[in-house]
Length: 286
Image (cartoon, rainbow, N blue to C red; front, side, top):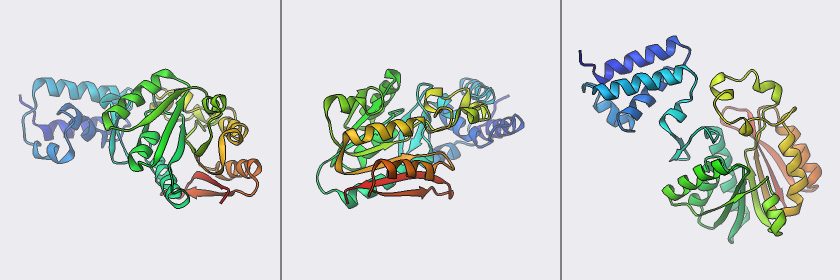
């Protein structure tokens, strides 16, 4: 018996919900198997009969998600700052909260700088931050660093496809700049910040599938922020901006670190749209 799109969608939604997954994922998976169509295109095809191939692809995709594979790894894409990024198991899936980090950094840059700006995004991942910054403001010379070559390859593919000019550096935190004596106007990072003891209680869809190196912030969650405090003074210009994403409840601790490292800087914690302390910024040499 031929199955129509709306019938298969109803089955997938129910099956996912029964197995503890978000039923909304059914729509994303359906759009993917229909050829990565947008929502409007999918709705126009609700009464179309699915091909046997598409139907089996949907069942396989739903099964993978039930088993714990993130939807974004199944479809191979995620939306970020109005653009579509390719993602795979080598990179952290970009989160909506990180869009707010990008937005505020762009605002601060426009407020404090008039000339060309050297910006470094530390922890490339999919390239979501660095590529978005480069495409949103053509005055930025954007660099990005990652310790893992596989992540850089994913990001380079995104940069090429989206037409972003970004310089990719393989290295550990700010070491590539320290080694070359390169000075920066802006440093932005969404580093791993989850304390090791909290990783054990994360949803399996996160802790068992996304790269651990992009999640673990050490025993207390602050290992990378502490390293930044050692390295930032070696690369920042007198007038500079620092922007970090942080975990819930970490804002004031990271802000205190920045105040100690840069006495006199304007340091503040910014909440995300959900009211959680999610970002910390420092403005030096105002």
